[in-house]
Image 1 (cartoon, helix red, strand yellow):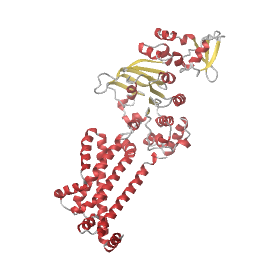
Image 2 (cartoon, chains in turn red, brown):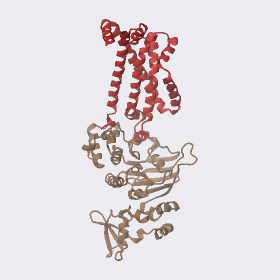
Image 3 (spheres, chains in turn red, blue):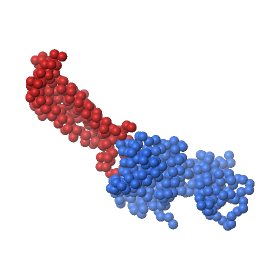
Image 4 (cartoon, chains in turn green, cyan):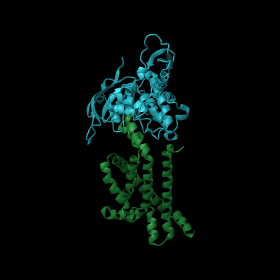
Length: 214
Length: 326
């Protein structure tokens, strides 16, 4: 409890620094998630439509998944140097596998008879994509984004190691100085953000699967 | 007298990498307003034949004409919007309500909202699902039979002249299937659609079809009325197919209308009256009574429209006769 009190005091006394770090952390996470969604949802759709391509891409992403986030961030360092953008790139690389794989699985999971009925009724491929396939794959795609979002928020902490800023800075400093309250200034908000993102995505997921419940 | 609505002109289909054709060269004419069943085992080419009409499969050779127009000359989506399509797996869109499912094609065709609502309610009543109970339900809240009713309503949404049905009742329990068959017959009578209905069930084919296309190994074996398929099989295969079931049992799936011949001369004294809907098994049992020579068929206004004697129920094929006497 003593630590916690010191943590809160620190946050109030250094609210400028805290808010800036929070802003960077959120910005970094949000932009990384947005960019990876923009790249990976279409990529997943292409994979689902082109079985030849999907084998290669799925293998690459599955192996990418095995690499720990810290390793990715450290690998980026000698290639791109320090700062915000290298951290951003690292986070995008982390978020890509779950989003692409889930989009692919969401599309592949659609019962082929539904597509046959749709095209047999005279829907063109664009109508099938927007009215049938995307709505039906959406719950799985959102589940992928949910995984990616938590991964990004947690890993954005590590961005501090390569000068990307964010709440990780407090953790790195706190660890270095063995200052537990300072460490918590970074760690607690990160945990809180991760939980918030889980709750938000769960709500969206419920919204798009309303038809599956009574 | 009748117009030809679908014409196959020397159509064949060989799938890529297949050693032999799924459908050999076939020429057929389908009359407008008729109910055609396509009967065959799996791999007989019956589904391939059906799916060439809405270009889910493209013929390898030959041409198909729908309402006089070569189907390759119109955009495929436009062609399909004029042809209702019902499949065994039903394929309702699970994320859409019953109403949204049925309204799919009208919405693509940009009908106005009021007209769509009226159409949806009309179709739901036609398939015996009260609109106020079912309009806003999701497919998963319906039984299999109810789902296929919605499937049929959806296929008829834009009032197409032709319905293609690929084993629509194949996955539905026997009792529900039988009532769906009766309802489909009533709908066809009322709406005068041309229906092509694929089935592997001979009883279903006899009961529903004005005419039956019997297919085996990619070839049309016989294209004829149910009574002729049963009594006058064109070849060994059809004869075997008919024989594999109890002939008396099969007679119960045909109604008097399908076997009657025009009335001859004045009314016979030794005759009984039956309605057009009476099945032929009942007719036969009447004919077997000693004081009855023929049966007069009357329509629902009690007007005589035809007659049936033992001659009409004779099996012309020697093999089948043997199987009956056995």
